[in-house]
Image (cartoon, rainbow, N blue to C red; front, side, top):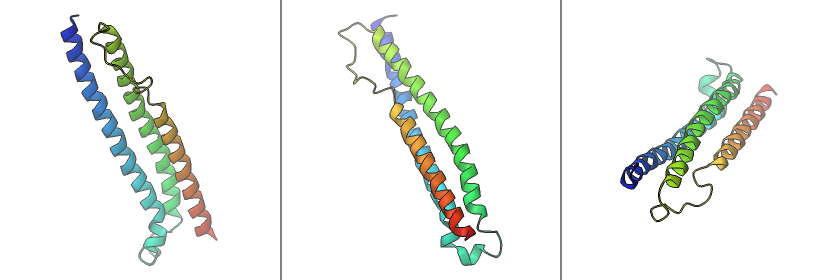
Length: 136
């Protein structure tokens, strides 16, 4: 491949990486907001919900959804990391003068795994804590 073709390919993959980055954070914050809302409904709308639905149901649903969301976020993150690996390979294909200087590990976002698992654990703890409060 010519350098111009490789640079064009790199630009395409970089746009995909940027899309995956913004997509991940968009999904992450929507899920986080939904988890917190589901867990706080028994306290915010107690007088409206108490007669219709048992309040204990909300943290239980929150725990179940948390596992579903963990799977979704891990799948999104694996695509994100795959694009980063492809970017590194494409960058290595270029001649030295055309290579982009990249901070080591910038496309290998293992920190996101930490963010995913920590937020998962915190939401589980919050759901269990609210469940204990409601069962008293």
